[in-house]
Length: 285
Image (cartoon, rainbow, N blue to C red):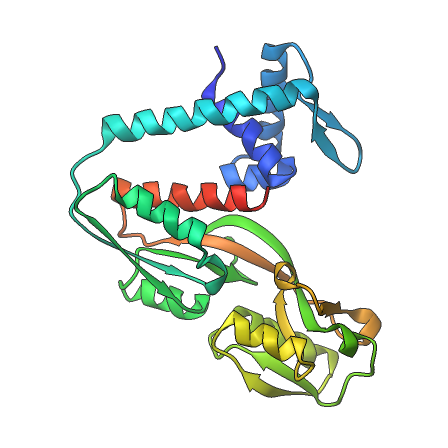
């Protein structure tokens, strides 16, 4: 019989692309994660991951077990939810950054709510700083968004580089001075990080465009109207990242995190948090 904890660790290592990030997700030490995988491989009697100094990938047996592991864990969650579900009537308020306002996540939230006839889910889309302030005021139970300096607060979903986004044509030309920026209004972590890094580097800047959506931020960069700090995952066709070779300082990583109100202790909130975690894991595969 497979230990569900070992299977959960195995799935996390693959989804997170490594032991250290899996340890963060599971709130374990890296040595504990390594020990779990070693015990699972001993149970199977075969290696599940082929490791090199730079990368790792599933072996053929690892691929086979991964399919079973996901199914076993899903059945485990379904059984737990079915047998421990308690009647719930009320509203759960979720704040999410625009990056998360995608049909697949909203569909998953709707499907979860369908399990609780008395549950209503309200969603607010805004910048993380504003959402976290509303959570402090008791207006939200969950917040999903990206920050640059969290001091370990919230559950880390994933992280990726924050870059200076601009048009591909602009990347091949000399940057104007002062540097025109497209920014979200305060309190925005990307804005704060960008302004601090430019100030430390002694680079003059001006806010050329104040944006209220990711679409307008990308439009400013695509048109060459301004340079915009953005997560590297937002770079698409026609956009490029400026860096030290263009005279700009490196930006900190954007950390995508899930925050839960200290007063939100109902199992429904925990269930919604798990929906978000699973969505983020599948989004990155």
